[in-house]
Length: 90
Image (cartoon, rainbow, N blue to C red):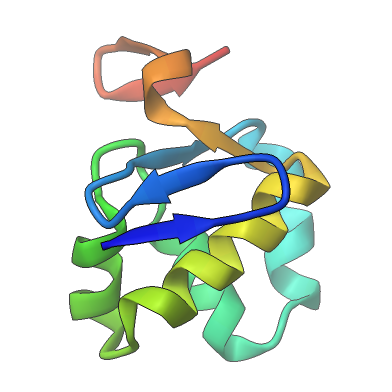
């Protein structure tokens, strides 16, 4: 399944990670519970399908939430991130 935003198209296998963990902590405290749960589960390894399974939400619902985070600049595709000892860096 593919999901489209105005700028991008991504599949259920797409993986995203947070850009700045400190900024995400602040954002998470202001989000409704459903969105906060998705944000806190982002680790740069879980796909949209994984997140949907873990949160018991549809892939479309998860993709919609991720598209919003992407537009806000709080996340980016994992292939654009560098991994070192389990942490995600810009």
